Structure formats: C-alpha cells, structure tokens
Length: 215
Image (cartoon, rainbow, N blue to C red):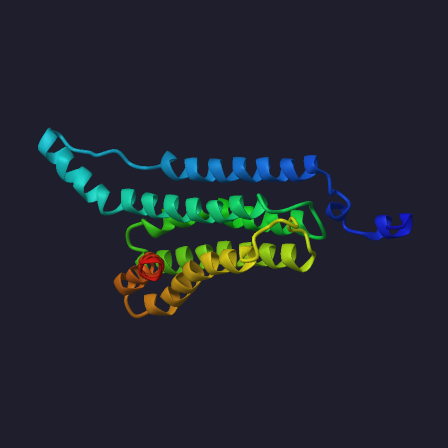
C-alpha cells in the first residue's frame, strides 16, 4: 500500500495491528457488560405491608418486569456470544469495521431503554413494537458487520469454512422472529410476544435434527 493510499483510507483500515483489534474487542465487551448491568438497575422491589402482600407482589414482578429483564439479558447475551465468536476469527481491522461496530454497540446500549418502555404500563403496543424494532436493529447492525468482515477478507485464514454462514444464521433467526412480531403487535401484543419464542423452537428443532443425523 502506497503512502497516498494510506492517507486516503479510512482510519481503521490501516489499524491492522493485534493491539488495535484487541482494544476494539475489549471496548465492545465492556460496553455490552455495562448494558447488561443497566437492565437490573431500575428493577422494582416487591412491595406490601406484610409478607403475604410481598409474595403476591413478587409473583406479579416475576411475570412482568423481571421477565422482561430476563428476556433482554438473554437477547444481549446471545448477540454478544455471536460477536465474541466472530471476532475470535478476525485477523485484523479493516475499512469501516470500527464504525459498524459502534453502530452495533449503540443498538445494544439502547436496548435497556427499550426494555423499560416494554414493561411500562399503559403502553403495551408501543413498547412491544419499539422493543422488537431495537432487537432487529441489533441484529441487522451485526449482520452488516459480518458482511463487511467477509467482504474485506478480514477473517483469519484458518477460520472454519462455515464461519460466515453459521454466524449469519445465528443472527438471522432472531431478527426474523422479532421483525414479524412488529406487524403482529398491531393485532395482538400477546401473539407478538409469542413470536419471540421462535428462535428457541428453531434451535430445538435444529439440535434434534443434528442428533438424529448422528444416530
């Protein structure tokens, strides 16, 4: 690469050192960890004048605010897992990787806010639609990051052949489930929430099929 080419390239294109890649991964892990922690900060405590009232309050929280917290924790954890495994197979940074990664982290940071809106009383439809849209945004931003890593040839030479396809499938299934829940929410918010279980069902079917093939 000539000096003129280096001067005209995006900043992260020339940052191909292991240190630059490690800093991006460490920064991403820290931001994701903070986002997961923020989910729990505003969780309410059971209320009541006696133990019986507090137990009833706890039961309501388990099917409401606490369930929303668990859902978002699992969603963030699942996307982090894909991000983590993907960057274990990245050889160096390249064009637009830093910016695409920042967009991914932005959507992750917005998810705790969407979680609060989702569990807000009196805003069920808005909460479901916004929450699903944010999760779709997380997945799409990670797909764009994956596409750029593959297009720019930034994966390690020894990366397994199915790395890109496997990561794309792992991201696309929840993106599809949450995307179709958006129009469904305008008919029934309960049905929209049930569509969020599709990734779990798909995972169970795939695992069962693979076990059947090995049998």
